[in-house]
Image (cartoon, rainbow, N blue to C red; front, side, top):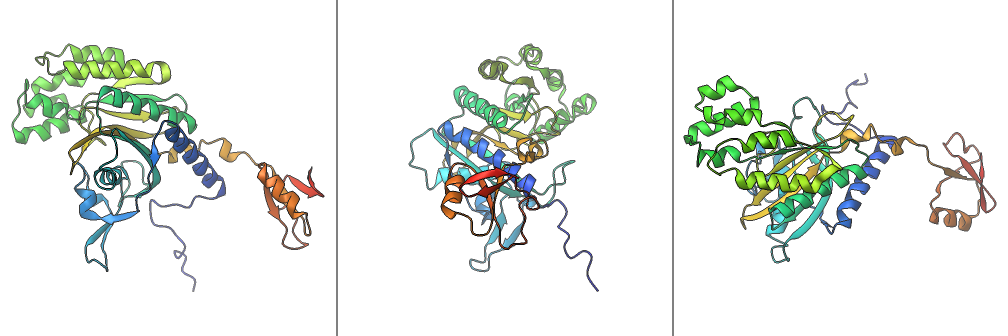
Length: 370
């Protein structure tokens, strides 16, 4: 008896059929081309590495989200990557440690997690991104945010919005004007994430309540953040946020949520999330961080463009395709492929151009509409 489950894929994994695969290819190429045009050199780290290397390169990396197994050769634990950023950090700290800074690198490839994230059940995603190694300055942040917006625009995203955050804000305030015990810091972070004013008070975070209201459209939220009396501890951050927002200008809608932490576990003073009209959920995240080993500052972003595939219009448009009958002129076919034609060659007299999705047939040396 045939097993009806034999050909099922595991939960959270899927095939990309020709139309979707074409869209994935177009989007990836568009994003990589934008990053390359700004001087970011592409690297291609392996899909699998030693778990210890990936887990120890940056703060907040969660090995429990990775598929792990023992390497039969080294008898050490390997992990399938869940984030390419940490691999780029390793490359920067080892093979490219002597390269001039700032070092600009970009990448693209699949990442896999044990389970999906929130309402998204996908366990395999395409990650495209860029990392500016050696700087986490306002200038570096501005370059990265603008690059991410341009890359998403090239990928077909419309109505882009950027949500700024300050990932280590609680740590900064807890060590200065709004002191907290070590045990209370994580609780305060959690309640700020949950936007729960009552629980925040109970946790001893009453001083942090004004942060709950410094959210929304950037001009309004930054004014509310500036009104918080933190003894000047927020001044440089506010100036930095204003400078980045000024550089973005009208290229995207900007909002601010200074206490957002989800997805920013290894970011330092600045983080941002990217959204677009007609696309559910975030399309990418980025910000500043430090690479362990060299304790080097860096700024970067990661895009997850799978959500754009369904909305991709170019991927759904039929392409002109040339049918090559038996005995066709091979030199003519090669010439036409060289100027952009897509060809499908007959393998037998039974093959028909229209049935194979072709729009033209090679008649002698020139295409003829079918």
